Image (cartoon, rainbow, N blue to C red):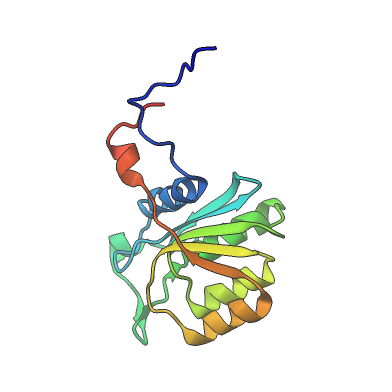
Length: 161
């Protein structure tokens, strides 16, 4: 039997790179100019929710009226991880045993929400303000934390399969 696969075809994107790239695409929807963060929640290699950092429903967006900064943090914006988790809660989708892909390492508050939601693995691309207590909590809860890389260049360069 003849192998019909093309030898000039680029390497197929890994699942980690695919979902990390999806989180970067979600970050493009961010409405807070201080940092664009995107997140996808995945179960059985299927995206079950997504989120980006920005204002809550019925509030103005930072990009339109400016950030509301208190103690060095924009309190107008809700974090991408929280948006994705709350999307699951709103629509009755279980996150028990799911994976979470996010552009930036989760903050302490998001880490606590991730643990409470039953997420078992967190994959992030950018190591941003790592909180030692968040790392400790993830380890204690048995949640895997791993840095991965997206491959948006494959998408931008017109990967054809």
